[in-house]
Length: 600
Ligand code: M6R
Image (cartoon, rainbow, N blue to C red):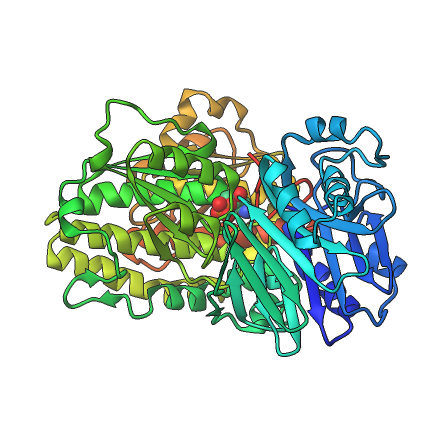
């Protein structure tokens, strides 16, 4: 969704902010803008792509501070006027904002003598700041007072003409500060400035940051605090395409290395132990009655996969709820119920809201996330990182694999601590986990075959994905991937459900993609394959063993036990990719979608 970038320091700020905006494009947006200090605050804004803004703005301006924004419309359509930055009446205060100011109407009414140009909620912010400046407040105090008046979620970044600082504040919307060699960076996510510095400070809700060319003053709830500086271990080129035509393709191919990172140092196969450095006491896990997973989209499907593993390996009842539908059932004992948020970004508003609900009900909460310092890590009692590295493509690929692998390790750890999982069974599952990167590599090595199959079926009317047990979430995820990047109609079904309705839609022009691997009850699914073939549907099967006799196309999957469906999923990712590529779709930034969905 919206993205923020900024720089203050000894370098010319404009080229850095231009690059920052390009790095943020993957988040999804529909207009963009820049404010640069060129002696006055020069504002450049354009609806449409960042490249249109960049051709309208100068490449350099000898500016020592600048801020930039990519906007994903909520209040008002994507026009030049509605693009950020927004300014006050005389253009002396410039603001970029992510989130929603819920009380903007009330504030606007109070500012009756101000002239507003846009339809946005954001525009009240610079006007309100200028009121406080007129009252004699310093810029820092004017920003602080303004923030105190806002309700809703926001990350705001402010420049005032004639001043030499950048001000930033956040509430429920991420902001991260980068400590460079010759200046300070600021962004809604680190990919904006990853090539410049990996030394970062994550802002927290209630923080006010005052950035100057020489450093950072950080105020937490009014008190100055020492900023905590973390050093990321993400390679700068991890956020670049590295020779692939799309980030998505690169990220699909990165899965073996991402998974090696995910499991590195965490498995003791012989002992049957997975060590995720959990602080959660063993006694708590032993008395646990239920895990309630909350997540959205692909992370929800990873949660569905995990629920089956928690039930099977740790013998603990596990529910999975789409985060926006989550409510706490009063009959549960909160002390014996764990709320588990699965979110790669750690910033998904629906997931954050659901995990807060769990926390408010008295549950212990845990996050499985890719993003150090993200909001979910502060909202939960414990965080486990999936270590997949930055994922730029809007379509989640490697993070799904790393989520499932991490949750699989958690299921083993819980099973062992609860005394529900034997050492031998745990060792087998961990050995399977260790084998996933090699198994996925074998799938990736067949990507020409997948491209050819995709070409043969790309013009179908609709695509059905089916699977059972661990193959069911993979069917759902396969369909989501195809629909979001190719814009073709695709649905995922529990294989046994077809005959209860969806079979009516099956014709010779609806290819059915079936998961027929270990862990996905292939024997039973084979009956469903025959059902659809009797209606002339071609069947593409991802299969581990002997279930290829009736298939029209066979994708063979190495047997890695309960993780075999996860490996089959890589076929579905590549299938979706090649279908979308043939149709020349905007694969990394599909229409209407955003990487990080920070509104409810
Ligand atoms: O960052 P999150 O994992 O919380 O994101 C949740 C969904 O928005 C996300 O998984 C989305 O469904 C995928 N980008 C689809 O490929």
